[in-house]
Image 1 (cartoon, rainbow, N blue to C red):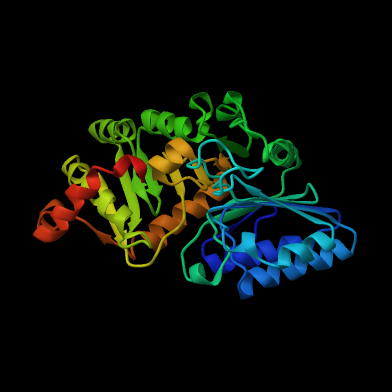
Image 2 (image 1 turned 180 degrees about the vertical axis):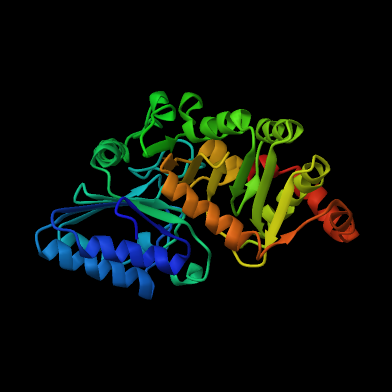
Length: 360
């Protein structure tokens, strides 16, 4: 474990990281989680939080109402309230609820945990037994400058959860150019605040040697694809690692409609047999991004997302070793001839799904 950061590459390891840092908490715990189930794993984390609350810690929990819908109806919420643990749910799916935004589609997809203004956790993890065997990528850092900024963003989000504004806590344009080892960046559905999307586009445009993208759900817009194709034309080595099959079949079909064109432009596509839920990128082996954003229209346009832009070379080296030493060797590299031999029925389904790709 590095003194400045710790990377987790599986769901189980990520959840262990969460339990470790909240067990060490002395003053406060702030959690912003998209997906939370009240199963054995969820209850274990809640028990730790209740124990910490009884020790006098200030604890705030924020969940998305869609991602954590089952938990939003749990009787344990009253127990949390009795123990002075404050809980809020973002953008209710029920009409006329106090925490409902005017657009149901907007989801808080972020995963942010701040402990004692000392530890910051973020990444792709889903908290629940159903995802425990997934490959995830999360990171814990110790950087007071960044954590203080993240705490301010969390506070703004917390106090605007029940407001009608879409402009909840976010970073700003300057954060894209900051040269810290780790810098927290957010994504919001407002046109001028899609900072992670802009970061990806800029990094792809500026890449001169290599691009590595690892993501579960790949249904990007035309502009994103255009940037990838242009990078390949500049002889940039573009590599995309995807799970062969995700938990959402319709998204897999939509993703497949992009593969032929990417292969035609000499972009390397790798399919992994396991469910990869990690979301990260490496550009020219000099910059990396680890976060929550999928490369699909929901994340690029409608979701609130977050992550860390990474310039720390030790951390980047760890990510390079992971992708080159583990993910790619364990994956099947696709070629144009093999891809063209997909069954006729699959191709028909893909063409039908293509019509709805902007909603995926």
